Image (tube, rainbow, N blue to C red; front, side, top):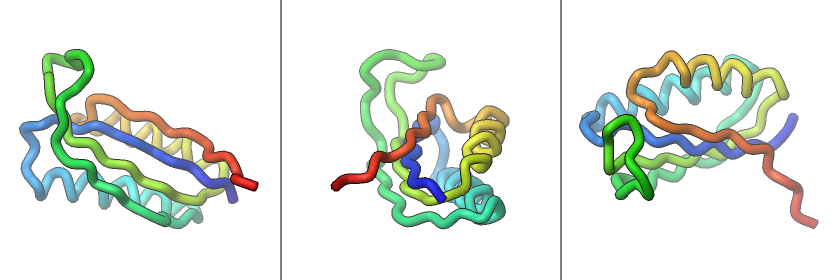
Length: 97
């Protein structure tokens, strides 16, 4: 399994239940693909460096997880279908010696 880090920004007008539902859905995709979520870091609402989709603020969340390589493709698909997410990034974490 590989170690990944995913950061996503959701619309600022979503309530806490909608934020939680998005996080739960993404964690389920990782778990169903044979991976495991290591850490979830909710940064909260922050001002964006530039306007995205008409929004000047967003709700930031960082998720660290381990999963087989194919899981990231399914995560990308689910994220693209989720209306509440305005920007995301999934990176492969490097091993620190």
